Length: 158
Image (cartoon, rainbow, N blue to C red; front, side, top):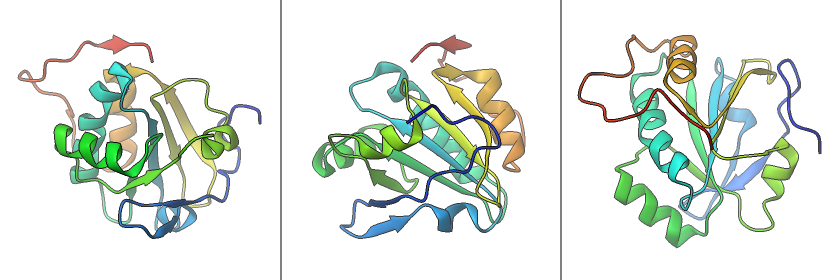
C-alpha cells in the first residue's frame, strides 16, 4: 500500500494488545484524536523515541489517545516496555507486519497523528525534537516536552 499522507483516512485496524485482547484503533481517535507510533525494539531510533512518546501519553489533553504499535512478539514487547519504563498502551504488529503494510510504513519509528474524524493530520519519521514538540502541542501537552536533563539529539533518522 502507498504511504499515508495528511488528510488520508487512517486504516480501520484491530491489533492484539499485550493482555491478549484486541484493540480497535478507531476507538482511540474517536474521542478527539490519537497519536500512533510504529516502532521496533531493535531500532535504536525507536528506542530513543518511545520514552518521549510515553511522556506525551502522560501529559496529553483530555480525550486524546497515544498508542504504540510495536513490531514485536508479545514477550519482546513486554521486555522492551519494562526496560524503557513505558506505560502507554501497546499493540502488536507481528510478522509479516500487515499493519505496517496497511500504513505504508517505510521506516520506524513513524509517528502518525490522527484527528477525531479518523484522518491523518501529521506524519513524522525518525526522531525530531521539533516534530515531537509540535505533535505534543496538538495533543494538548504543555510545552516544552524536552528539558535540560534529556540526553537526546535534536534529530536522528529512523
